[in-house]
Image 1 (cartoon, rainbow, N blue to C red):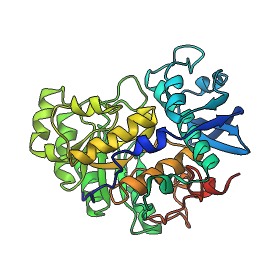
Image 2 (cartoon, rainbow, N blue to C red; image 1 turned 90 degrees about the vertical axis):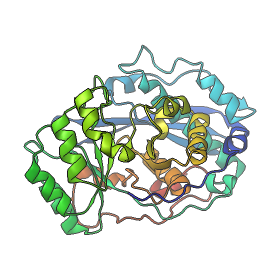
Image 3 (cartoon, rainbow, N blue to C red; image 1 turned 60 degrees about the horizontal axis):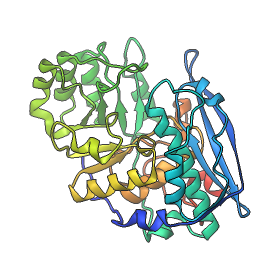
Image 4 (cartoon, rainbow, N blue to C red; image 1 turned 180 degrees about the horizontal axis):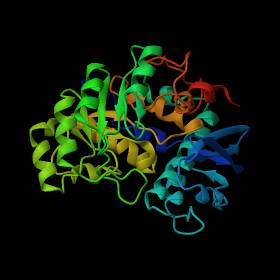
Length: 361
């Protein structure tokens, strides 16, 4: 549950927001991955082109039908700064019709802002790390899993047989029992338990359960406890002795959301796409540093360059915490040859690229 002090440039947005960017054309590329017979993940890569360069981002909106929307109009031109473009993105209708969930607006905006950042940096011949004067560090990551129904520890044990050093973020459900928790705890590989009590109207909603909360809080005494539903009095009472380990993810879209939490957290899951804008994300980094709140990264089941971008950010701002940003290869299940944690820095010479995407033209 340790978290090394994060590194942040207080004036990061002053530096990045001032970058000029030229957009001559743009297009979208659909990505798909059949995860199971019930779930096919769909995302779209945003490609912004200008000045002989290309910037990449990824729209992580979850509803496949939302990815049929055409790209927004009005982005082409010479923008005096990323901040000017960002403000315009905040005004544009990014969806053809109101999306299924309001948070999707932030997800889509982040796709365009991250692509614009990549393009602006490449046009300037600089990398994100170089522009900020930071050095990417080896990146610690965990693997996020929801166990099968009925739940068994076998998926965790199978992965540990392949890589004994692997760490996990697990999603407890009402079907979990004491024996399962004991088996999982015996691996000493669980860094975070995600209760998903803050989700509403999604496929992963997990209503509060005092029994489940007590089971995992006591069964994993060193793990972070993410997104409990504290509106349930009995469940809240169960977690009161463990509040120093409570962290948040789904409710966090701005500094104002952090300040509105029921108590000051020791750590937070910072997902760039939830903030929508580069400015909002960098303000959150600075706020957490100032308030001594540890940060760890979270993913949105990215299939393309978006995954590398959140790994890049984590390597700069919180490389040593249990970042839920495992490489895309882990989406396809356990198999030999998957990368081990920590990941070596893999950023591009220019732009906002990491890993395989760092070498794309």
